[in-house]
Image (cartoon, rainbow, N blue to C red; front, side):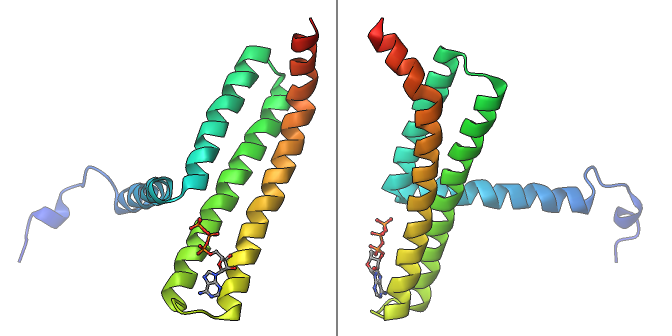
Length: 135
Ligand SMILES: Nc1ncnc2c1ncn2[C@@H]1O[C@H](COP(=O)(O)OP(=O)(O)OP(=O)(O)O)[C@@H](O)[C@H]1O
């Protein structure tokens, strides 16, 4: 029976260790999705391009907010889509109309968010690119 160990203060409280572990699982999930999902790697490349454009054109803080929310929302939708695909494959590896509908609807969520993000991107960057090309 440990007489001393429990009475000594731990370096990190249990709650902090649990939160750190949860962050680790979340990063592991993003890394796994990046490894398996081509679409997510395309989003990563698009994110770098958008950040570069924002820096180059010196967009305003309000525009950065719209761009950041749009980029984050597309990543979020793609990650949720990946999670839904994994669960559907787990519970219904064989053909089932509901499994197909679940995957189609999840993919539809990504499409809707991507179109919204494209709209934001066009509103913020198209006039600047247009002006640059028209010079
Ligand atoms: N178990 C299933 N039952 C019925 N239809 C399915 C099933 N699995 C996939 N489908 C249909 O095939 C489509 C493509 O499914 P798939 O699992 O290949 O996803 P995906 O959109 O190609 O994803 P990714 O390319 O990211 O792997 C689905 O959107 C759905 O219409």
